[in-house]
Length: 433
Ligand code: LLP
Image: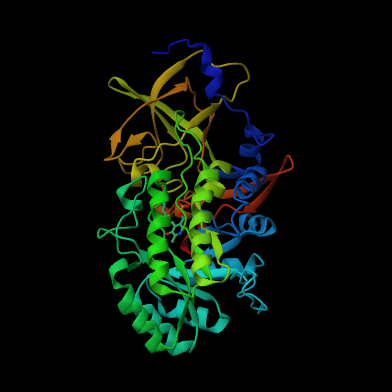
């Protein structure tokens, strides 16, 4: 049953960054990822106070996005050989040009940092061959690196003993997390680093993704304490990522100014203690790209299961996995195929094409199907799933042998295809009968 609410138009969206949603779908097909370049630039500039913004590219690693971010002066994090390769192709240098060291100037920043808890063999080869700086999340990594790059300077990723995230699956601190070097192990790890002939130049903590600022703020104090244990060899400290973005209508942007002030004060106290400058880094993924990205998908069926109404679209959890993985909420709006305003709002569940019950975009944590108020939809209308620019395309899969979607970047009012949709041949490439 539709309720004729006045604000149906609030949930109608006909344009993304000045380009018609219908034209995007006509030209590039659906499902389609669309990014707004200006929104990404704005989010980069929000963090200008930090010495280094290091993009956790795992959030959105399309080459065009990396190139745009590089032009904003943002550096990059890589967690695999594939991400190192992407950074290089997007124009990042593998390592910093040697700078002139002085106590008054900031040390040069590493354009690419490899952050992980292990080296697989190809990643170890890549960092050794290219001279890429490593952020080590386990003591084993130190010895493996020292064997290949004697005398290297490294960053330690420390697990401060607490963590927080929007889901337990994105909490990367505390005993429940495999990430980082346990905070109580630091004296032992420093001995192992020294024995291996490595110097510790960086200290990094990342307690989780989508944490709230109150939890993130606790990290500054924990990092300061560990920095005292490491001492004067430190030249860089990193607050990690985790900055939240508002997904739900009642959520707001966090106070980034206050967050920077807190970290800057910790940095200054450490500078006074060590007698030299310290570079202060932040490592956001979600914050830079989430709000810039949308999935455009087409309504292919509208049906009722008992008392519940379902809208089935051509995007599924193969396209955007966050709802099935974490019960994540993504705002949605409708772009009706026919002109004119929709005649009311109704409560619907939104699902995709996959042969699996969990293929539902409106679900809560635990897999319970929920509903969402949306304008009455018909086959052929387009649905825009919003705030999908972080952990969207990068977590898409070929499940059910569906092609990875196309990606489009809109800049200055024009849309450019930055990744072609996969073809059936792409899907079976490398397989033999
Ligand atoms: N630094 C490190 C070491 C990380 O592991 C991560 C994210 C980040 C930075 C960036 O965190 P962000 O600023 O984006 O919160 N797939 C999940 C998120 C997983 C995050 C993994 N690590 C999601 O869709 O919510």
